[in-house]
Length: 250
Image 1 (spheres, rainbow, N blue to C red):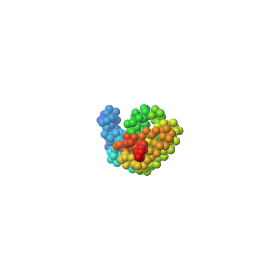
Image 2 (image 1 turned 60 degrees about the horizontal axis):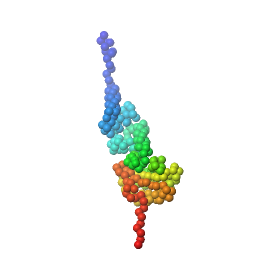
Image 3 (image 1 turned 90 degrees about the vertical axis):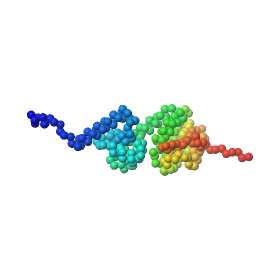
Image 4 (image 1 turned 180 degrees about the horizontal axis):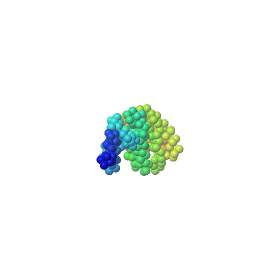
């Protein structure tokens, strides 16, 4: 009888089994926390929960904290260059791919927000989209937003990427594309990786050249934006969109 009772007792848990049970329970608690009160998750817990879907059988809290320490913020982790992500121990292709899925999803949502209504009625959303798309790059990149006569977005096109502080822009390429798709106005946008959104002399000259070239075909440059993580500059607001008229000589 005693032998029968002993046979039916559960086997003692090994250290590995206890660790697996704790990890599973912890992940369930994180998911419940997300579903019931998502704003209550600190950045490391949200990142940890994301990583659980790419790394199913490992405690990823240390990895989440290492990533935040290495890159500085939640968004900087998700937008970090692939080659830098692979420098973090235990971070593999599945995790990097998942970060890219999230990044692309965010961009599509923000772009749809811009496309839903006339762009000039959605200016803050345009700024948010530009920042999400461009400010995490270590190179200057240049985008053109082409619009119809109702100021609805027709096309968002990345034109060029350059060095860390310069990208070549050719206004006649913008004009050619605008004529091809029937755009009547454009907004130009580029990033400054340095974080300083002050327009350079080259930025001003290029913008005014673009205004001149496009206006020859009755296509209006509505604005040129320079974006960084913390701020942006509007050429229109700063009075830099058009050349200043020289005073008449007496």
